[in-house]
Image (cartoon, rainbow, N blue to C red; front, top):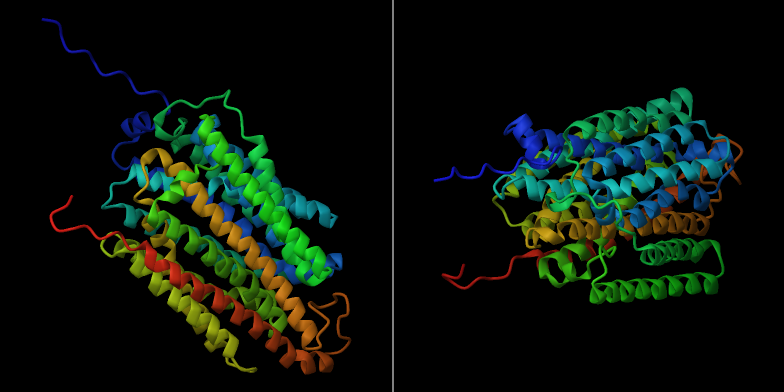
Amino acid sequence: MSAPAAPAPATPGSLQALQARYGPRYRWRLLLSVMLGAMAALVSSTVVNVAIPDLSHHFGLGQDAAQWVTSGFMAASVVAMLTTPWMLARFGFRRTYVLCMAALIAGGVLGGVADHYALVLAARLAEGVAAGIVQPIPAIVILRAFGPDEQGRASGLFGMGVVLAPALGPSLGGLLVDAWGWRAIFFLVVPFGLVSWALARRYVPVTAPGGVPARPGLAPDVAGLALAAAATLALLLGLSALHAGPPGHAAALLALAGVLLAAFVTWQQRRARRGRPEPLMHLGVFGQRAFAAGSVVSLIYGAALFGSTYLFPVYLQLGLGLSASWVGALLLPAGLVLALTIAVVGRLADRQPAHRLVTVGLALLTLSFVAFALVPAGAPLGLLVALAVLGRVGLGFVLPSLNLGAMRGLPAAQLPHGSSAINLLRMLGGAAGVSVCGVLLEWRLAAHGVTAMGPGGPGATADAAALAAAAPARLAAFADTFWLLAAVCALALLSARALRPPHRPEGRR
């Protein structure tokens, strides 16, 4: 009688081989590796906000031009996020991560040494591409490497880590801006990128999703990517043109964005019917009720999240006249509370339904925006800190719950496309939110008779007395913008109820 055949050895560098090499704790090392990559991406996305007034002054920019440092990053992230499933299938997890960290580091160095605003924007686009590709990957890792009873805990730990970076980033960035100017904040991403690059080379599997080998000959969907990029650019230009250009020009751009989006959807459906490999987005994921509802929440929530992340530092500096270092110090407690809230809510997500946690979070976030809109001039700084903390507690309830609630029902083969789609919609909402906040703020400032957006910028007021006289009008313009964010966030509450799992009859499995 012949002996049973020995199991085939695991492919070197695969998930199974790394688990055998590093033991049962390997899944946490893998989570740490992808978490640090996401931290590097988020540092690059948020820390630049505290330098916008300094950057505007250096290059003589108006608010509508300066906000492209943020919205351009997010536009690049939105488009690049569509390529994540193809990148993972083409290069595997490890090479994808290493390439993204290299692009992130290169963008930080280029932005730090740039002498022209066009180079600053090019650096931000490179960082945005890297951040967009990286961001969907941790959700795939959590849903595949951890059991259902650990996914909430892993999401909480991941969320706590990724918010600590942007929480500490503005504080450190404010000090760097005051000490060495806006260039210093670009170099802040370099050490994060280097550490993540080293960990990815050791712990991230070389295989593609599903444990299969990467397919070097897999061709990208160039036509779909071009349609998505054109639609995103037309949308952002249309939103900016709502204030900066003639109404007909804005309407034409927004209509073009709608046509391009419809063409993208039609193209993806055609590729799916023809069985073409790796379309940019498998639209079938939206047929799952919870995922469709989570996608709507993610889109609206992204507009409120990124719009407020852009607006808060500008409000504190230009509305209240605080220095960049003061802004960082005031935002630090809110960031730390956010990290702790995510850690706690992550454990609750293993026991509480996702729709309940998301609804609580959105309600708290809406309340914080309303409170900021009603804050009177001369309010104590402690009150501002408390309101920022309230909003970040709301974020802490949403962040670890939304992805789990939306994606738990997807088949394993659709996880990369589901994660890419839901992160893309959040970033698309964020890009639109930043653009709309910038445009609305500029419009409301003009409506209240204020022409300057930053110290030394075009139309800057000549003396301190005139600046003080303009303060009430500035605060009124910011209040109008906060009301918009409150309305957008309240709208997401209507969709959060659909995250409720469908009722199962008694005894049905």
